[in-house]
Length: 303
Image 1 (cartoon, rainbow, N blue to C red):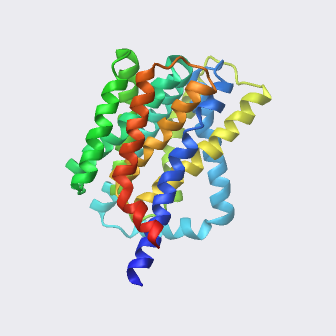
Image 2: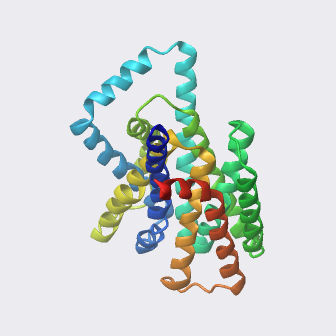
């Protein structure tokens, strides 16, 4: 009975880890709607809008949780306060870098370069978690990662420019996941609002001295609100929540859902030219995802 409860509990964290990249996989669609605007403007207004939505929600519905976390932080020893502050600053820097490079890649490089980033990200996450957090990997999972690495090498044979952008995007998000795994003990939504607030401290001065006029078109603001809520707050919270119950390696590997969807959209919805080798490579990655998670899938199906 206890094992069944543990498996069920793990199942909800796995579902959260799956749902976050599933949602992100479709983000290229609204980002392309506003491709005529500078990448930095999209990023800045995305952060400010997400922050406003999140603060309103927390102040209306989660004020007690916020107060409890503030008291908890105040009671920490000085060394722990410094550690938590450094982790929060690092997380903010990594997520800010990830967002900007992703938006720029989607609108000015290619959808496929952004997809390649999230193929590289799980490998960087797994390597970082294995080396820094000492997370264990079974032989089957190591095999799955090796298969995925081979597939990424196939996809990286194209433009070096695309590959460098992909690695930059991937590294930012991989280390964001690792930092979030280390940063425990506080409510995940509260952590997210602090991270966005720190990003806003960078963004607001840039908006004040921005040489671009503030967009007035309804399509821009409607899209920004959609990106801020559906494609920012919800998946970020899901990925942070997943890290409570599963390893950052598993969360990272499930990120492969994102590029599989992005690749499908690039080939069908956006009509980008796709070589046959890419279909093979993405098919191999799908096999690697199943192989890596087969134990978890069997455990949840059997309950």
